[in-house]
Image (cartoon, rainbow, N blue to C red):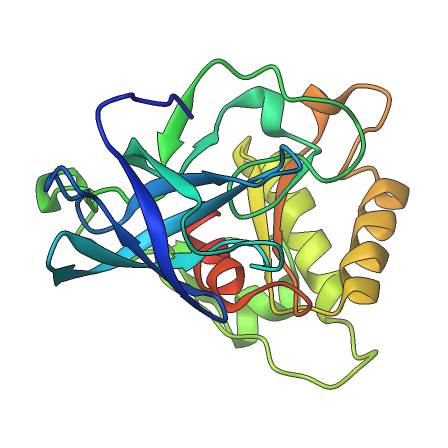
Length: 237
């Protein structure tokens, strides 16, 4: 994210993950804008504008825990929505809601970023003819085929094979369609997220020796993270 020196304010109220920020100059950031708040220890927190309150104030939701924040601390409008890295360098890596790698494998070298809030594709760019998405899993394609471009829900208890099915889909998408997948874990237990990551490495979906050859990128907003992070993790994906 690129900082702009155009718009600075300060925190006036903190209620859990929700913050009120005042911009004395009267230039309020638009809805969904990212605001960076730097703490005394040098760490920073990203918050997202959700509401314009009037009186030069906005209400924002924090993407991280608000412990350590206090009234009066400076807030800098970044001038854009939360933006995350995209492209081949993201393959095989795990990211948090603001696009930071959290897998202890170093920084991501992607020079291209995109905002998490973007317009949907124009209708003229969409395929209107219904078609079946071939997963390569015979029982799925025969008994419960997936519609291309649609959504599907997989419901089941623990240990019934949901993760196995997801990894099989990722493999088949890569081999049969020449594509890659993005996995978003929203509200998952930390243990489950780690288990999935290890299983993906064992199956070859993630290639630790050469990340660009991996077939998936992962975005986690786990259950121990603030509501804002879980709310926006699906957008980051």
